[in-house]
Image (cartoon, rainbow, N blue to C red; front, top):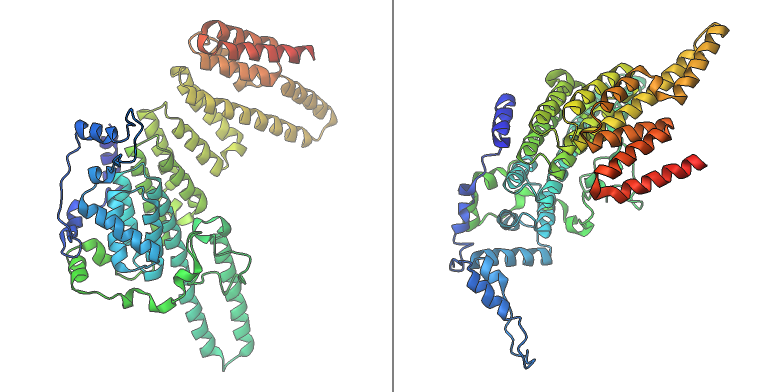
Length: 521
């Protein structure tokens, strides 16, 4: 089901997923440089595992001096694979960041995408050698599509998105700075006052662009060393320093050599040249990082992340990256993306479509809450009323769905507070004292009894009709009664739950005792 939905989604929006980076592009493993040892095929059999396990058994005499050691690596890895791991470990230990190491790192990550040190080494190579970041992002997407449960690949993907975003703005601002300096040079002999005025206007414009784009700069993954207290920080001069460290496990000493270690100084010897020439991915990694349309880039990343969700709709990192992408880069407030791609409607359609596939998915309801909060729907009474009707429709049909009722009760409580605040504001704006007194009296009554609110009372009456069908309906009603101070009705709900929910009988018993203590007070 999910694969068909993924196919339909990527076809409709023109998303290339997964990238065309398959096993054939890793054929260079057969190259002479990497094929220094003979290939050995190991077949894992139960008897072999049993023999290895016996090596750890202590004999009756207790003589374990000659006990053999188990070697799982010989069982699970070929000699060539072991060689690659050893090569990478040696490079990491020596802090040798080279293009050869980048190639070896790619193969090691393909074999084991959860290898943390390999990803750290890869990030250092990207920064030190100034390799193509968009190309590496394709590699990361391929690894995620191959093993979506690998947390390290998701973290690396976020790091790349941030790095590309910041580098793109850095290059744009450098170009703007050069153009500004050129204009200043042309106008220098004409009018000094005009020159200063232009500079001030440019500085204001530059400050607005910087701060609006990076108002939460310190919280970026790639900025942990960039904003340290020992560095002299200037928002105009040092905001995009090329020598900035981007992750906490990057040492400043790793990048001391500066311009000597860049793409132009990579030594391509014969064997390495053969690997690059026979592989599109490694060839593209040497291309320069060019300025891109960052808005289109973020939109494509959002679509791509939606494809990841279709692979596993309940996987935490897929949803976490999606919310991070929207929140960190203010995508829902991006005028370009909203106008050109109508991203807000797209996200609501995406959520509603996934609800038709798996309405029991709690991650979907949490994400819906996140979107409504980002759009400030919780401050609009009409929109909240519409959302409550939306929830009630599903809750009435799927009364055994805990995820719906957890979301539903939060919406109702938000609506009650909003309704009460609106009533209070309305009474303050009333001109006549008599009308003001009447509305004040009505408001106090509404505040004391939430069931005087028409929508809340309607929901309560409708759910009472099906309360015997689901414990989640009873829990929902008990929360409403508790909020309203109707403790007797709340106790009745808990007693019904205590009688029919045997597994949690002690929970409801404790709830009843707590409410009874509240009544005595």
